Amino acid sequence: MSDKIIKVGVVGLGRGTAIARCLKGVKNAKLVSVCDHNPAILKSGYEELSEAVNDKNLIQFSDYDEFLKSDIDAVIVATEAVYHVPIATKAMNAGKHVLSEIPAVNSLQEAKELKALVNAHPELTYMAAENCCYWAFIQTWKKMHEDGLLGEIAYAEAEYLHALNPDEFSPTYYPEGHWRTYQPAIRYLTHELGPLLYVMNDKVVSVTCMEADVHYDPYTPERKETGVALFKTAKGAVIRLLVSFGAYTAYDHNYRICGTRGTLETDRRKVVDEAHTLASLHSVPGTFGANSKIDIPVTSSYEGEDSSGHGGADGKMVKDFINCLVEGRRPELDVDFAINMSLPGIIAHESAVQGGMPMEIPLV
View 1: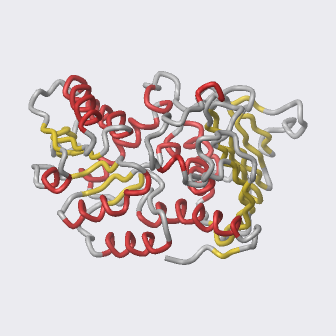
View 2: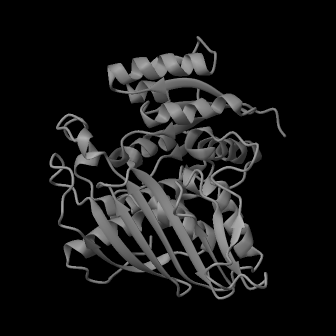
């Protein structure tokens, strides 16, 4: 491994603080500067990170343009979801590599702009920060599919359930104008679609979607809190996705993949960080019946791994990004992957607005 040190800055110290903490354990990385326009968040994030990385020389900025002038090689973009493309654009135009939180884009126009931006800077690396692709069971499923244990995939499904307890509903829970008060839930589907496409090595080409008119949180009346989308893939499979930001299930992710020679699913009796994989495989005789599934004891992290930070996914994601820069290789979660898992949520919502009309996913 090279001794090269990648100097990193992070913008957006809400989510960004958790990601930046992961740099402490990466040999070839150093956190140099942080930025946030909110004074309170900047102060708390700066104090937490300067202590976490044990560096009192960490530089803080409230102005993003000034931040980009600091001595950094790469930027972690962890601002609110609706600002990722403009922030990434300034970073790459300033000569910085980018690790961008998700969703990568918020419109078809942004998808086109992001693709053109990355193409204009072949010397730089862009990577999408879809941490769920780094969960141990997702990595295991990918390897099993590559080894032919699932055969040809016909169907996959996933569910993202992330809600507040109704006792916590409040007009001040989110700041006024925060994206979570108005963004349709189905547009935030990359935690589900990303890992499925990653395992399947596929992309979606069309969608039909419906959104519920029932509202859970009375203080987010503009937001469609529950959406269900059906996608067709380029390889002929069907994917069903449910994203719900309503009650009454606090937090969970569920996944299933059905192939011609095997099926994998997460155990829904437990939250994803603790759920084993249940499998029926043609290669293992006697596992075809409903009561004879194999229990594969892999969760979000492998045994002995650090499971902090979304089940260990944050740390592995950050390490992979840094290794790509050190080794000069293209990340698997590149700009094409970023668009392929983000744009479908935008089109899905458009389908729902039009009563579930089938719509093609545009090529970018």
